[in-house]
Image 1 (cartoon, rainbow over the protein chains, first blue to last red):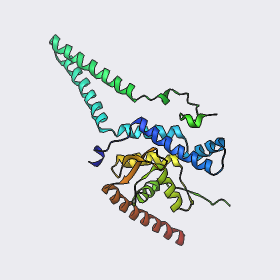
Image 2: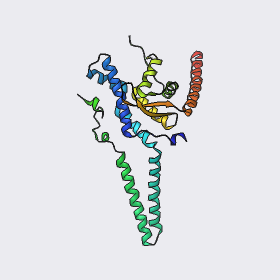
Image 3: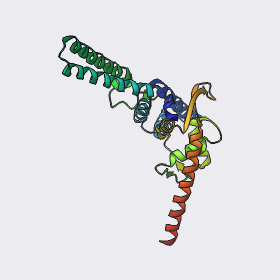
Image 4: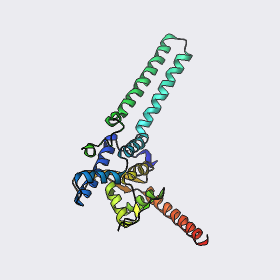
Length: 137
Length: 110
């Protein structure tokens, strides 16, 4: 039951945490006498693929958020209830309630999807990183 | 001369993280530094691989995290072992000892 109570980081918190690690590595490399350019290259090499790591972390955190999971289940149940009402009922007003439930479920699912989008998803895939500090030329 | 570094075997990163957090709570960079220091730079740990492992372990309830202030006065997420994590550490340590003993025996006899 422990994991149900765990508050997983938000997408922004994941990014903040990874950024801190990157900054520590950059500082460490500069203190070793590297130029900023060398430090950036060495940091990326040691850290690995930054965007892949970030996306993996974000996915883990999203699937682990209990409230969000419960909300998704509710949305599906709402849509199913609406569908059953529409199919099984011969009364017009009950059918309308079914349509309304389906509409509410659809809008909620869309909102969930939009909320899960992050700015980095819209960056070109060939960018080395979505972290500005590492993208500087 | 550069030391030969060995890639970490799959599944062992979690054991190393649990062991590292046994004594103190640390942020991600601190965990990697501590692993490098303890292994005297003989193990190659890609820093980025740490975070998915940390989040998975948190998901399983082995570790928990809270925001604190790092040594450079930045907001940092500090991880600490939970009771479930302590038990997991004992299990993984015992498992590791069994596996390494078995491999050593095979290497000696083959």
